Image (cartoon, rainbow, N blue to C red; front, top):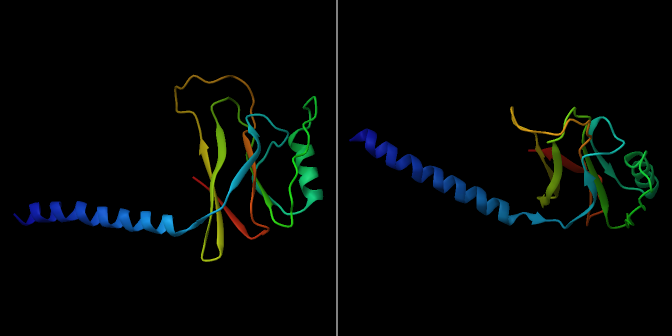
Length: 152
């Protein structure tokens, strides 16, 4: 009987914990995200995250991302007095089936966190046999450079 009582209490505790976490997430300030570029092919071969806070750095990154692309894509406008650019790169992959995307940016207690979700093919998945460099670039409506980018 004690074991049955424990089994019935455990799910209730887990539900309470999940509800508290959900309330916590809803209390955070979500920042608006505008996608500027993304896909499977770019001129950046190494994995990494970049935070851009100046027009010069933005123009340099845009040139590197689109090297080898014709016609050249026009540099999207960013007002760095009130916006920041975030870029995430997976690095070179030997097949298709990989992706990365900044899905949400939130502020909680003054800390800004951007979440980049990654996806990889499962063993046995049919994928294209092509070298890729998955990436995603966004701008957000805050002019800060103390932003943490985390991958999920």
